[in-house]
Figure 1 (tube, one colour):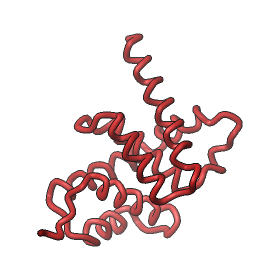
Figure 2 (cartoon, rainbow, N blue to C red; figure 1 turned 90 degrees about the vertical axis):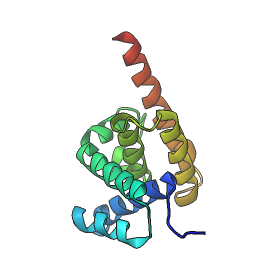
Figure 3 (cartoon, one colour; figure 1 turned 45 degrees about the vertical axis):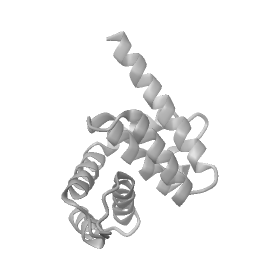
Length: 144
């Protein structure tokens, strides 16, 4: 049995870790990406997915944050836990900018990662925000 990591969840977790290193550790983007790709043995598909998700999350971060902010009722964006914020950015970027993954898969994966890495309430919070964004996007598509 090979130790090469192939799961997309593992790739999503790696992207989350890289974004966290940038946010908290003040790592450069290129060093953070290089570090997560080198950290574990992965096949080329996984490496490509990590790179694509990392880049799309960073290049669309402001838009993703705006999506989150518009769904926070009576809550300030800066009060959302850093890990939850970053996880939401990754999931939203994946939902809207990576066509090979169905949005419901992105939502489900984000919920599972929140359960693993964040607080007890985070998975419900992540689910609520992502579900709202997904439903709004579906309504917009129907209207056009």
